[in-house]
Image (cartoon, rainbow, N blue to C red; front, side, top):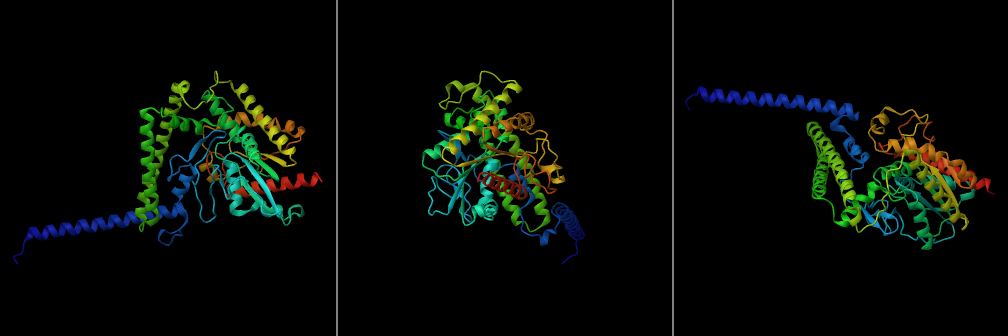
Length: 441
């Protein structure tokens, strides 16, 4: 073959390009390895299959990648979860036919005399408390270690759902008692939703005592089929972003190279930002739609005449919360069922807690819509504790129970606790129950 300088030159250029690409790839892979090690504190190629940080961030933000709308309107409770959602096959946990995440269908009927039924009421913190109990039995084991509960089979029934606030707990208690649900003890964990979410109701000119506007307005908008075209477009955008998020998360689990993982992580983070922006836009569109079509809605949600001034608004919230707890106690006491009311800790109510660096990053958001309600509302709620105690309500101010641990206890910028926080809460609840049971002998 005749020697061709042009061919040889082209070959050399291709080799040079290939070498440069290989060097670039090595540098990018090395940089990705270093980035992964700094973030995860482990080597990428020998990493344990722990939950990805970006996945934890998604869960912390409350993004559901599998289902868009899991709540359903309920004629008595406002809304419940979709039956069958969030199924956990390993624990046999699922949303039961009444819309509560539980091991049991309701009414639960005792199968033997050793069973001791505890009902848990409240919002998402109460729901998480019950679900953690299904997983770890911290409350049950602690109670069973005392003679008063030795040999008893503790059965926990979850009547909590995200966003619930008084008087929803009172209404749910009455409903299930009317259905014949037997209880030996009731726990109500609340406080945060009563001020944080009721404050949002007030700002939206919706009656404070109605269910959370964050939950109920999107559902009623869909039920009325009166969402504006812009909101429907936002729903499509949100759903498409969630599909991409799910695909990105699945890809993260299968990446064989650190560079693949780094690029995919950045893509997922951008999708999370897109999702949040779309949700903010959708919420704004839904609220405006509610204001424009409130009178023509087939779902009746009482509007307030105006936005209450803060002092009047938080007094009304605290009064409703107080009267609802009194009502639960009276109903249960008349049936000789002990009632325990716990005011939950929250990161936006100032205590002596020293937040960990991780908590400062994930649990404190100076743009949170809940800060105002907590800071202004919690003091008003706590001013009612003495009156509740005088009314013979077993009420416990638990806002300080997380102060003595140096571990991270909050897992998001709302109000929820990680496993450490859940254990502290469960121990506090069990200790409080035992104290009251022994004092009442």
